[in-house]
Amino acid sequence: MTKPNSSPSIKWVYDILHEAARNGGNAPTVAQFTECLQINRDAVTRAIRILRDDGMVETEVHNTRAKQRRYYITELGKWTGYCEEKKRSTRDCITGCGSKFKSEGPHHRMCPRCRLDKSPHRFIQEFGNMNGRVLSAGGA
Ligand SMILES: [Zn+2]
Image (cartoon, rainbow, N blue to C red; front, side, top):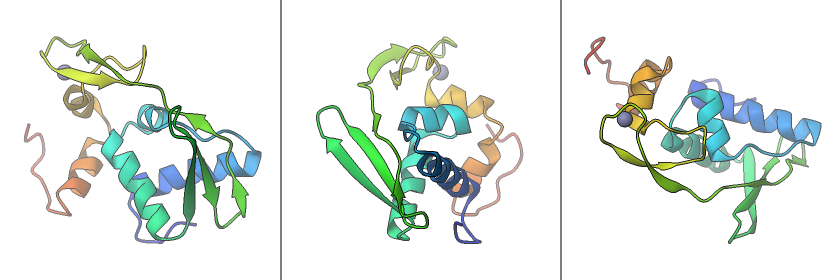
């Protein structure tokens, strides 16, 4: 269990890692986390960092070139399988907004800004990013 005051993204990331370790499955890549949870890369890495700081999760990078990574879930005493982070290439945003961004792969065609605009979790994310300062609706 995550701490009661943890943000939703931390709970989601933890639940996914917990499930992977419990079932002996591979950990998702950061790209898979962003795709599955519809939160941005920073939110994923921040959630993982907080879980590590809290002693809930440990990470181990097996091969620094291939960036194979696995996670240890303290609560379970189990490791997930390794995931392999793919190299990111630069791509033009599919919406035609003119942004170039680091793509995670063929499925990742929208820049972080456009993606965030379309995300159902946008409010949660902005709320978190602003350290709890309440935003007016539709401010973009
Ligand atoms: Zn865009």
